[in-house]
Image 1 (spheres, rainbow, N blue to C red):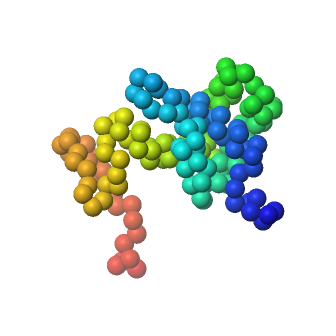
Image 2 (cartoon, rainbow, N blue to C red):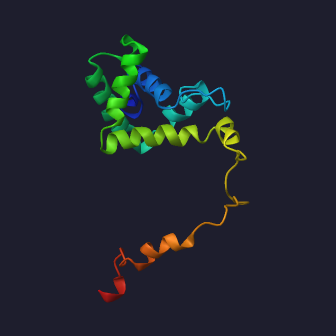
Image 3 (cartoon, rainbow, N blue to C red):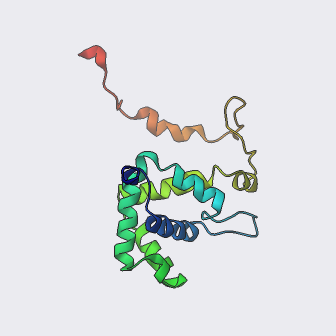
Length: 153
């Protein structure tokens, strides 16, 4: 069982991560959406870390260092303060942590319905988007190519 440890979060890491997810995205009764620590959503979060596991571990370790103890030992206001202090930092670990929480949250059917989207995959029927301002792409189109042209080698 020791070998599995490197591919999953410890129970302490999961507890801190779950509390962090609830602070990042709290439930909202007005829109009828759960928090990110909802059992279904958090199960999706924790099971879909994949290549972000190492970065999430680093971020959670940083969170524990900022708190000076497990988040469960802190009152709600202090825990939120420490969490937002971590989220204000730059770098891959914090970005990965935010990305996995948001991605799983918006995969939840209840959340998709609350924003007026049918909970389904976009393919094969697609989603209709309103026409936008295509002139915004002019800056990108005018930019020099960012890829290598193998024909000139």
